[in-house]
Length: 158
Ligand code: SF4
Image (cartoon, rainbow, N blue to C red; front, side):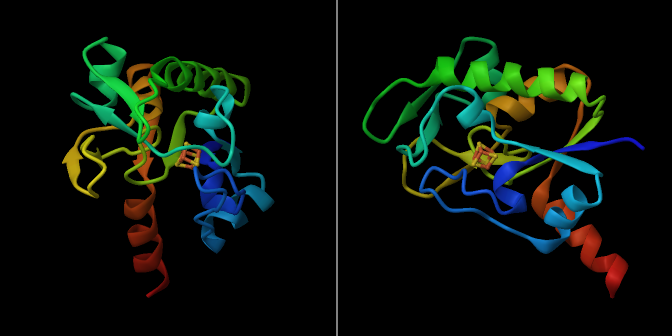
């Protein structure tokens, strides 16, 4: 059976920057049945939990991979290297589990697949990917936005 990687906060692990989760039963069921392996790239990159919120300044995750943008906390600390390390660790996990796809939490500076916060810490979004999402995509993993997955799952049950 092909496995998914899945953002740890989506399955109920309290990995979010504020020590909370974004638990959804459909995602925790995927772990219980062996279809998905949870991970948190920000923790894997060495950041603590709870931690200061971060946003990408000057672009999106792809721009971070290209060295054209940085990830900065709301207190001005540059955590770009942690985000890059987390992305690489996540890809290692994908290879270990032979996962060829990942369901990733929407809007996160690591996991967002379609949009991320714009770096102003004002709640505004810009189109683009988080750092881990961009890294996984660059390495051949099919990345799926968690909100898109939920919409599809709901259609199946209607
Ligand atoms: S980095 Fe990804 S898995 Fe970790 S808390 Fe943020 S959205 Fe969830």
